[in-house]
Structure formats: C-alpha cells, structure tokens
Amino acid sequence: MAMEFSTSVIAALDPAKKIVVLTGAGMSAESGVPTFRGEDGLWRRYRAEELATPSAFQANPTLVWEWYDWRRGIIGEAEPNPGHLAIAEMEELFPHFSLITQNVDGLHRRAGNTRLIEIHGNLWQVRCVREGRVHEDYRCPLPEIPPRCACGALLRPHVVWFGESLDERDLTRAYRLIEECDLLLVVGTSAVVQPVASFPIMAKHGGALVIEVNRDPTPLSSLADESIQGKAGEILPALLEKIKGHRGLSYPIHGLNLDP
Ligand code: BV8
Image (cartoon, rainbow, N blue to C red; front, side, top):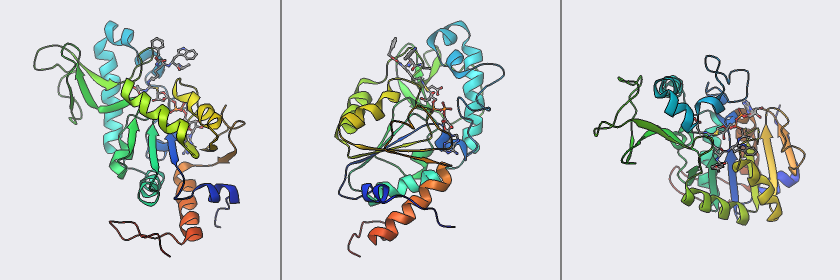
C-alpha cells in the first residue's frame, strides 16, 4: 500500500528550495547499528555519556577503546540502508541540498553523500593526543588496545566527546545552513544532545518548514510542522518515489535532467 504524504511535505521538497537533512542514530538502526537511547543503547552496563568523555578516556583509555573497537566491529559489518540511499539520491536531485549528521558511523558517506557535515566526527578517524594529527584507520579489530601513534602517544577516536566543543568550522557551516534553509528534514534523532538539538528551533525561527521522520514521538514532534512516524528506511524511499513521481524527476546515472 503506497504511503501517503501531505501536499505540504511534497511541495516543500522542491529542487528550487534550500534543503537540509539532519540525522541521528535512528537513521542507522535498520543497518544494525545500536542507537544511544534505545533498548540496545547500553554497552556492558555503560551509557554512552559515561564513556564518550575526556575524563573516561583519561581514567581508562583501554575501556573506552574496547567500546569503540566493539562499535567499529558492528559498523564495519553494516551496510547503508534504503534510508541512507534515499538521502544520497536527494543530494543528486536537489541542487541546494546539505546533510548534517550526528552519526559517527560513516554510513552516509558510504551511501554516496558528499555535501555532508559529520558534526560529531567519524569513528574511522583517529587523532594523536600529543600531535593532534588525524588519520583514517580501518583496522578491525584493532591489533593493539589502546592504539598508539608512531610518536608513542595515545591515539583517540576523532569524535566529539560530551563536554567537548564541536569543530568551529563545522559549527559555523552548520549554523549558516540551518539559518538559510527553506526545509529542514530531521530523521531518527531524540533531539536531546546540544547544540545540535537546537538546530530545528533555529531553522523554524529562520522561517523554514521543519519535518520530522522518527519511529517514536520526540521532544521535537510538537514543534515540527509535520511529524511522520515510522522507520527511516521505509519512509524516506517512499517519500523520494513520491517526489520523483510528482515532479517527473528522473536522472541518468551521472547527471541531473529536470525536464520531464
Ligand atoms: C558541548 C560522538 C560545549 C561520540 C556524541 C545540560 C543541558 C544542555 C546541554 C548539556 C547539559 N549538560 C551537558 C550538556 C552538553 C552536552 C549535552 O547535550 N548532553 C545531553 C546528554 C544533555 N553536549 C555536549 O557535551 C556537546 N558539547 O556542549 O560543548 C561545551 C564545551 C565545554 C563545556 C560545556 C559545554 C557535545 C555533544 C556531542 C557528544 N558526542 N557522539 C560517539 O558517538 O562516541 S553525541 C551522540 O549521542 C550522537 O552523536 C548523538 O548526537 C547522540 C545520540 O542521539 P541520537 O542520535 O538522537 O540517538 P538516540 O539513540 O538518542 O535517538 C534515536 C532516535 O531514533 C530515537 O528517537 C528513536 O525513536 C529513533 N529511531 C530508532 N529507530 C529508528 C528511529 N527513527 C527512525 N527509523 C528507525 N528505524
């Protein structure tokens, strides 16, 4: 049974508009990646907020790295799901498209998105705690825990931990995109973690339409102009088909052909 979407949702997904998509852990749930606040959010008995902090790493870098190695193991086996692929296709279809993700799993990149801000980092990147140098490291499992830089200092995941500020450039770019967008599509986030959780309010203040896609109600559901409840991997492909049908949008593999 084809999914129904309101005319305002279809109207909002217009190639002429500035469209920003903001995603959270719910986006990768159907790829088998545990969410943070779901029933699968705990590792051993720790919550993410307990392990993803500078003090936890200071106190026990081995424990923190065992947790990241476990997550890298799961994510290394995971594939982008139909929701990721639909968002990658949106980037092809909409000239003024940008994607901001809280996910550090790299699945949006693997799905083909390039106009992407990984605002909390990427767990396939590691950083030397002494030199600050960042490099990609896909070894899974890691041969040595905790891993060390050639200089002998500890490596840490190149992600933003709780209590740490976000990368200045990423934040400035994200704020500008959010302030200027016509449509903000928020997918699979519980909208709790700041400063990203404030983006929908900022977009709304900027006059944008805010549409939420989430399996469950969130603090955002009442603020959003439209809250579509369901799984991202089912809703987004259906929404895309609807838009393409509605606008007679089609495109050869490498290039955009807007003329029906
Ligand atoms: C900072 C990287 C400035 C690491 C992450 C009190 C009040 C306000 C703020 C604070 C406060 N106390 C502390 C703060 C600040 C703190 C914060 O917001 N804490 C929260 C917990 C209250 N923020 C920070 O510390 C930030 N930095 O503020 O710096 C500063 C500097 C110095 C001193 C003070 C301040 C840094 C935040 C970034 C932390 N790093 N990740 C790693 O991943 O290892 S956050 C991490 O958790 C994720 O990146 C993501 O952002 C968050 C998880 O949230 P979601 O992605 O939304 O996932 P969740 O599981 O919660 O929800 C999933 C949703 O999907 C659910 O709604 C579910 O229903 C839905 N769903 C499930 N399946 C599906 C689905 N939806 C659709 N389809 C499905 N199939």
